[in-house]
Length: 268
Length: 251
Ligand SMILES: Nc1ncnc2c1ncn2[C@@H]1O[C@H](COP(=O)(O)OP(=O)(O)OP(=O)(O)O)[C@@H](O)[C@H]1O
Ligand SMILES: [Mg+2]
Image 1 (cartoon, rainbow over the protein chains, first blue to last red):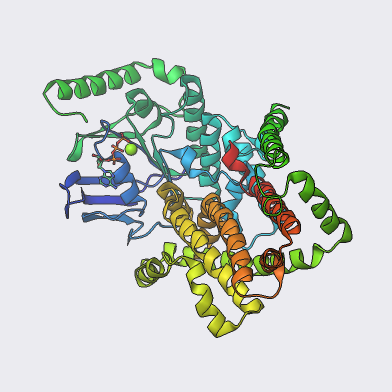
Image 2 (cartoon, each protein chain N blue to C red):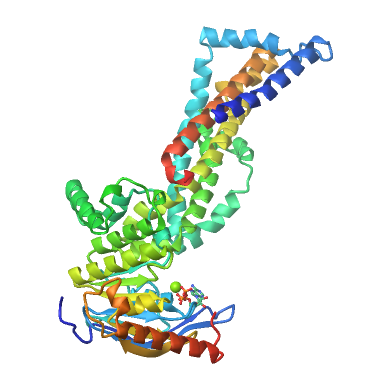
């Protein structure tokens, strides 16, 4: 794993206001500032509708912020940078239904002037990583939700990003699949030396996977607090969850979130 | 197969109407020289089919239809994609489309005859004009309806604009494009027959009118039956193409 480097990805005073001209304006993000180190795994925890997807899509260069800036490796992000891939919350909608699993992954290779054989090999390699080697010729709609998410992950990895932006990647799969996919992503993160930003509203997931956790307030959102998890790696699906530090962190975070809700904040 | 069973059942209604028609004729309720019975039309139909004399007019009509239709499909998809992908072109062309589209296309036949005469050029142009708009409008709607998630996925994965159009937008709009093409096909058939009736010296439309004028009522109805079969076959062929082209829609 590469040593964490400061100032790799900076999110500075990002503010986002939706609409405004005709209807009423929605301030999704008030002011978000976060520093992400290279090779870091950062989880972003926040209530539903607080602007998590908005934030991550701004980081990905997919939508413009109203104010503030995102800087990756010294360059301001104004369009999707090649070294960053955003994985949609609605992952099943992000797969091309007219392409097989293999062809979906091939999408990222086709523009690079590779030969057909080479593309097939590379696709096989990435599908193997997510355990879908046997489903190359299937169409996305023939797969379960968890398998579709694996295809989306394989395709994102095939684009060889340095930064992976995951928007609630496991929220639509069953509990067991979720645990499997969490371990898969952690494994790939470690092996490929990725930097990962993961959005979730699952406290357990955030603590289990991340190096640091940023907690967002409800809309208009700000960063309420950032905590270091300080849990040993590699993490183990069972063992890590039984560590006193894990339980303590989870307790603190849940208490914080509950307390905030009881304090009368609106949770959309 | 239940599918076949249902279709077979539907045939009953056709048989019923034919039977009723036959009975009405035999009972002497209509003038047989104006409305011959099915059993009188059948031999006329058989004569046309067996002698092979249907081949030339059918070829002429279908030829004009397919040329005009192909032009309309290519132009409609191209224009729809351009207008759907460029706000600028949309702003420029949308008013023009909205002005020409509502004109009932048969109204243009006399004008086209003035410019292009009564030959193939006129018929092809009329078919193309009539078939263009359903394809264009449906393509445009298809393009505008592409899921934003797909478009953003293409961007984050680093697809170029051109790649996105070819690999995402075009296939994603294909179901809508095919819907437009299906509507266009029947429009085209209507227009080619009408153009042949109003201004032509060949083709099935011309023939039907000519037979009517010379009081050859039985062959006239036989040709109408042939047209019904043509429409039916075209539709079945189209459905087969559609099922192959968009298998993911059947999920
Ligand atoms: N394109 C848009 N136009 C207008 N408002 C929007 C748009 N996208 C999001 N919003 C609003 O911005 C707020 C934040 O939306 P966002 O999807 O970023 O939240 P989220 O935290 O990802 O929610 P969830 O947990 O449900 O995924 C919401 O109130 C939403 O209604
Ligand atoms: Mg979201």
